[in-house]
Image (cartoon, rainbow, N blue to C red; front, side, top):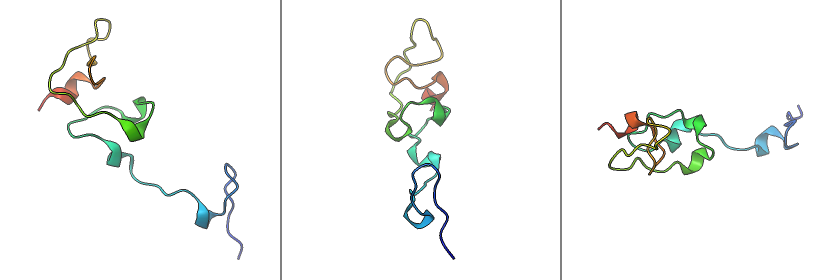
Length: 72
């Protein structure tokens, strides 16, 4: 039986991309929506102290994580 072909990249199913849980990219202490990050594979670690942006009091200006991520 022939393999299914991906309509996005044209590769057969056996040669298609590998998948992991999005949780594999979550830094320790992070409670953010992972898909709010532009590059989920390069989320910075949560910094040691929360210092808010002036216009966004819920987000840290150093690491860009939410205030809730800094609660340890």
